[in-house]
Image 1: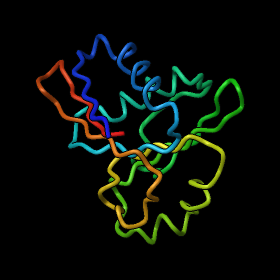
Image 2: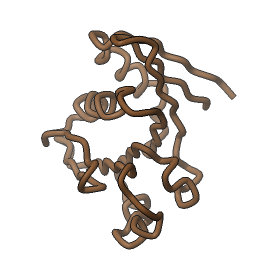
Image 3: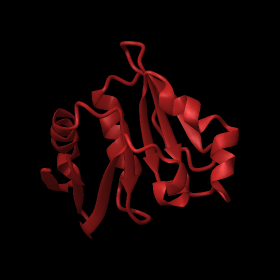
Length: 140
């Protein structure tokens, strides 16, 4: 197993997201852990941009899921579990079907429904070092 740790300034998020995608190229399902304000949505937005998203990327906090299309036609499903009351809500909206589709799936606040997240998801931890610096950690 290899442990990876990126420490980056917000002004360097593009390069960091590109490096992240290069290293995690075998993963289409990624769960992002971290507290409020650590930059999960911002990092996912940059990843989506690099993947060629033609749609506006925004936080799905109230919708639970946003779907984006890439220029190659590959969908991206962006989940935010922050407001769910029970993992059953996710099953009701077809979470398992989204995860089995040929698509990228990114989750914010996965700890709210850990018991239903498939094992094939890469778990990524994000932290705020200071106002302008973030840390991204994961193990492959």
